[in-house]
Structure formats: C-alpha cells, structure tokens
Amino acid sequence: MNIINLMRSTTLIFLLMTAVLATAAEREHKVVYHINDSANATAALHNIRNHLNASPKTKIVVVTLGAGIDFLLDGAKNPNGNPYEIPVQELAGRQVEFRVCNNTLESRNIDKSRVLPEATIVPSGVAEIARLQAEEGYVYLKP
Image (cartoon, rainbow, N blue to C red):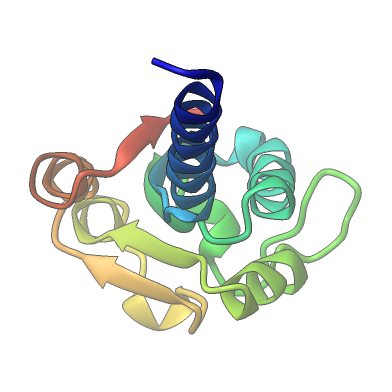
C-alpha cells in the first residue's frame, strides 16, 4: 500500500468516526424520573433542569406516587415557601411530562381536581414506570 492510499484510508476512517460520534451526540435519550417522596422534589426538579441544560434533546417523564405526588397538587410549596407550580410549569414548557399515580390519589382520598394541569393521572405509578422502561426504552433515574 503506498502512502497516498494509506492517507485516503486514514481520512476515510476519520470521517466515518466523526459521523458516528455526531449522530450519537444528536440522538434523543429517554429518561423516567421516579419520585415517591416530595421531600426530594426540589432536588429532582433541579436535576431535571440541569439534565435538560446538558442534553436538551432528552425526553423526560416524571412519574410520582405515594408522598411523591404532593408537589404536583394545587397550592403545594417547597420548604422555602415557594410554589412548586412555577418550576413545574417551566419544565412542562420544556416538554417534561409529569404523571401522577391514581392509586395514590384514591388511597389518600385526594380529589383529582387538585392535581396541577401540567400533570397527567395514570392508573398506577409503578406500572407506568415499568411500561416506560419495558415498552418505550426509558432509562430509570431516582433522585
């Protein structure tokens, strides 16, 4: 193999590797955040914001159940007295989806009308997490 053919082969390999890396960087990731305690909600919302800042094409679904639904109820405030509704609206504007477990609502006798409009009620939080992982290829994160 002469030097010109070697240089062509090297250049071709370099171009192919660059194309593969560029495609991987542009690929959309799918992540489900599991929140079962609203004491973690402020940190979780911060993590989600940072996640989107670092990887804006990431598709994020937040699934809440048990005490984790509380921050998605009308009038809920963080420990500093700030309403959760504001960061939830901001993240929903960035295409983050919020889902609330209906089993939790029923077992705690919470009226569905108290759930923020940015959230969707699903039959079961754990079943929704399992479905997202098994059927839609979501990566699981629990802040």
